[in-house]
Image (cartoon, rainbow, N blue to C red; front, side, top):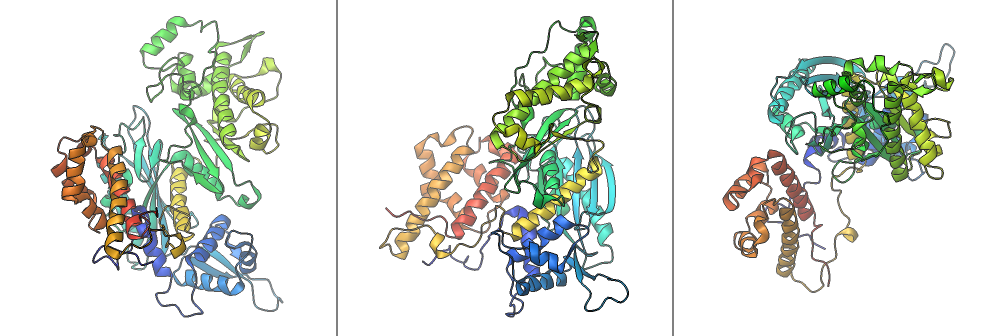
Length: 610
């Protein structure tokens, strides 16, 4: 079947999302334009080699190890000739480095070769944005080589401006300055991309919800940072705990662990989770997967209430949130209302700064729970219920629980009357998991161990702002590899048998009309979703918009589609719409149109046979 492309667009065939355009440019420079038969290699082979070297970084792999490990993912392995082509192409592009391994005196034959990820001509940027309630935001920016080894790191305190666009401008200028210093005098030095780590709900470059940030809904942070950089770089944004889960997938024991796992992290002001499904971080439909802190939970806060009633009332009035106060998202009875250090300290009438001391208090006074013991037990029970819900929904083959040091570094199994309040927190988690988990769910998550795997967020070798920025840089590498493997959201070229079937007997003019009708139908659905005032509730208005003007259709069928063009058109057609005043929603709307445009041009929007 011949695809009917809009006039003048036969040579324009966008197959990548806007976030990955920089990756596609990098990839096309690796693949020869007109390869000889001895040079021809698919991008999937390149991606498979890079993935294996990323798992082995920074030590690398011997050539024979790559032959045993690298394959298309179906259990088979690539041939030596195919692997040689991929290694040659990647080495020529300086994405990998080859070194001979010295075998010692007297060793005969050709020395074995070890391949390492990266070179001194490639780097990636990782940015951690520290957001804390009632505190000034700070930024940690690191430049790392492709094996994630640190090259340079700097911190910057942001101004008190809470507008995401202004914050993006500051971050963009900061990153651009650091890139310029690294590239100084080296014209061949290249940046693979920029990764941004931020706490909250994010989706394809948009901060959908970050309660501590004060940013608007769907703030286009990655887009704004990309524009501030003024570079043709891919900028990817991700949630902090998703990035911790991603880091776990690049541990050297990845091949020996189940491909489905989870990370649950407890921070001072919230609980998050990162889910790994089929060896990839699962983010859900709009990036909202893995938010156990906002699950409702109903636990008995314990009676009698704390004996320091007057102190608690005074502390609450002074701003210390307790178990009874709403979550940061303004809703009640969420796990975040109980399980986090800020709430435990507040329930006991103290500020967060006193949490470590409170965690070390005795859990029992004689045979009775102390106020601290009761509060920590309640908080741990809430988290335990959240973990049970998660393991029932996902059935992970491993689960890592990251806790603040005061909760992680405790001795369990001591006599009950010697236990600390922090030990009660941990015991409550395990008790709820034991009592509430169904079938083998708990054993699977524990990998057969008697307790969940726990690490301290402070003691974690990959913890802290600098290492959080490292995780963001790893997301850049992971996205580039996924793009090469064609496992991302970009649209691969479609073989003829996958192009939608069309009614038989249509000539080219009829087919073009049918395709346009199918496109119009999908456009209406997108427009209705982004129509908060229900401006399209009137059929005459919709008919005028689509039938008489065809303006939005022309935008989608034309390669000039961008946010400004959509904004101008929206202003002409629907002046009162709030879409004009919400840059985040406008950016999301434009992205959906761009996705639709790619499907249109690739022939994936076609009338279905009747």
